Image 1 (cartoon, rainbow, N blue to C red):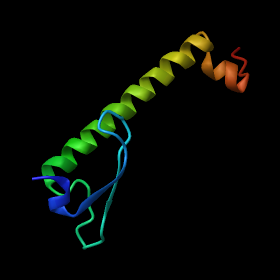
Image 2 (image 1 turned 120 degrees about the horizontal axis):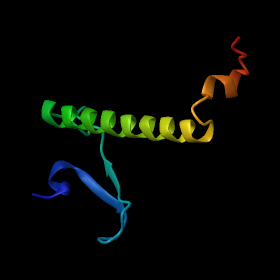
Image 3 (image 1 turned 45 degrees about the vertical axis):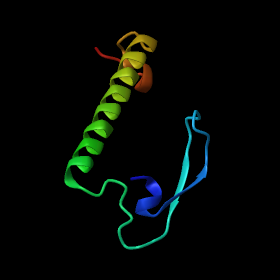
Length: 79
């Protein structure tokens, strides 16, 4: 079975290229992740990537502001 068996048409992209463009005629079943298992896997990947990005941003911020982010951003003077 190929993607054309399911109504998808390959528009652009080579076999060895990383970006592929596909098109599908609207038939009411336009979800990419159509079953529960693939939707769960998609959201797990999304959470993992979001957490990794947030952690890297946090580490970068702590390095740039030497741990004093609130003092650096808001110029708070503690007595």
